[in-house]
Length: 232
Image 1 (cartoon, rainbow, N blue to C red):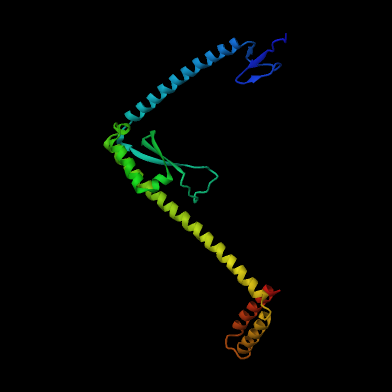
Image 2 (image 1 turned 135 degrees about the vertical axis):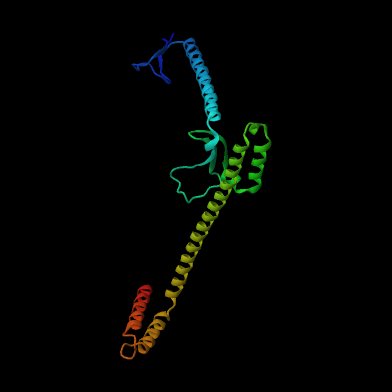
């Protein structure tokens, strides 16, 4: 018969031989005993969490209403730049009294974009059982925050769409310029045309006959140098 292995447990099962671990496990009964202990700890933890939820609600309810406001927090990856817009960006709406606050709901950007969706949320705020305990002042600041965030999301989306369109147009323009330059360089007569045009302009704006002290001729020479570099 194979000899029973001894295992140790400290949150993870580990093979025999690890030192410094708290509990030795030899049978399934040992596992059941530990599971019972963990379930008991979990129950106590859940009871503590429930007490804290109740206490948090009590602290908020007892706080003075003079500083009542709604804070909206956009949840996003810190690596994503502020100008980037995503339909799935999440906005958390908090009711705040002084230093006490509670999360009311979270809405994605695609919901906040749509006026009908905003009106639907406001209807829920006024009518549903979930929101029946809200005071008129709380409803007022929440509705105001909904509309303000709606306008903010619309402006952010419009700015992002414009930026994306500008980048697209610039990329397309640069591509068209590259095609035009390629066609320009492939024309066998282009160098002769450039040289002929240069001679005609040089004759017209030569410093000896021009009253601008050679300024126009300098511009012509710079343009000729640029064209020569493009054609080589």
